[in-house]
Image 1 (cartoon, rainbow, N blue to C red):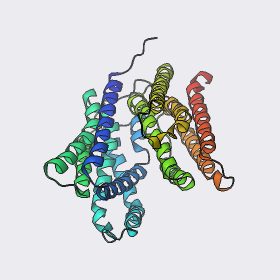
Image 2: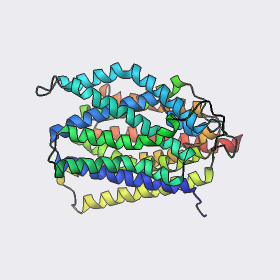
Image 3: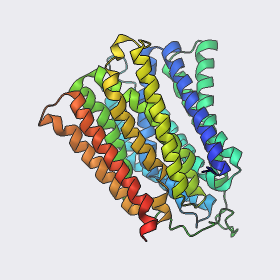
Length: 406
C-alpha cells in the first residue's frame, strides 16, 4: 500500500527532526560548556516557564487547528489574548514556584526576584511560538511549517555556544538569553495574526474541504485536561525517585525521553497536520502507527545491543529491565498519537479529553499504590506500563473504529 502524505507532513517532520537534533546539541553544550549551577538555575526557570505557558494555552493550539470554520488569523489572535489573561491569573503560582525553587539555596536565596522577568518573558514568547506553529499549518506556505519549528532551538543552541565558547559567558544568563531569543524568533510567525484587522471581512483562505465538527470543548475542560497532563508527568518523575532512588528514576526518565521522541513526532508531523487540513484518515493513521512502532522496536533493540556489548557504563545495566515495558508503552502512545486527530474530526473532542483525564487519574493512583502495598521497582514498572499500554491502545481503537460504527 502506497503511503500518501500531505506536503505539510513532510515539512513538519523535517522541522521536528531538526528541532530535536538542535535540542540534543544544546544538551551537549549544557554538559560541556556550563557548570552545574548555571544549568540548574536555567533548567528550573525554563521548566516553570514551560508549565506556565502550557497551562495558560489550555490546548489552544489544538483548537486553532481543529476549528477550521473560523478565520485563522482572528482565531489565533483571540487564542493569544485569552491565553495571556490566563497567564496573568496563573502568575501567583508561577511566582510561588520560583520562590520555592530558590528558597533552599544559600547562595541565591534572594535571587528569585531577578528570575521573574526571565520566566515571564520566556513563558509569553514560548506561548506565542506554540500558537504560531498551529497558525502556520493553517495559513502559510509549507516551508514555514518547517522553519517555525526548527528556528527557535537552532538559534538557542547557536547563541548558547557563541556566548560560552566565544565570549566566555558561562553563567545562567547566557542560557536564559538563548532561550528568550530563540522563542522570540519563533513568535515572529504570530505577528500577522496580532496585526490582523478584526474589521476585515475577507473569506478565510483555509476553508475546510470537508465537514469538520472541530473542538467543542469548554475552556474549563481544556484547562483541566492540560493540568492533568502536567501533573502526571511531574508526579511520575518525583514519585519514582522518592520510591526507588535517583538511579532508577534516571533509567525510567531517560528511556521515556528517548522513546517519547517518536509519538511526539507522529503527533506534530501527522495528527496536527491532519487537523489543520480537516482530514480524517484512518488508513494512513494505522500505517503510520505501525511504522512508529517499528522505529521504537529498532531503538529498543539497539539499546539492548549496546547493553549486551558493554558500550554503556556499568551503572546503566539496570536499563534492560525498563527497556521493553517502556517500549510497549510508547508504541501504544504512538498509536494514539497517529489517531489523535480523529476525535476532533468526528465531534468527540469532549469524550477524548475525559478519557485522557481518566487515564491520568488512574495512572496517579497506580503511582501511589506502593505507599500501601510496597513492591519492587520492576513489578511496579510492569503494572504502570501494562496499564498505559492497554489504556492507550483501547483509546486509539475506540476513536479509530468510531466512524465505521456510525
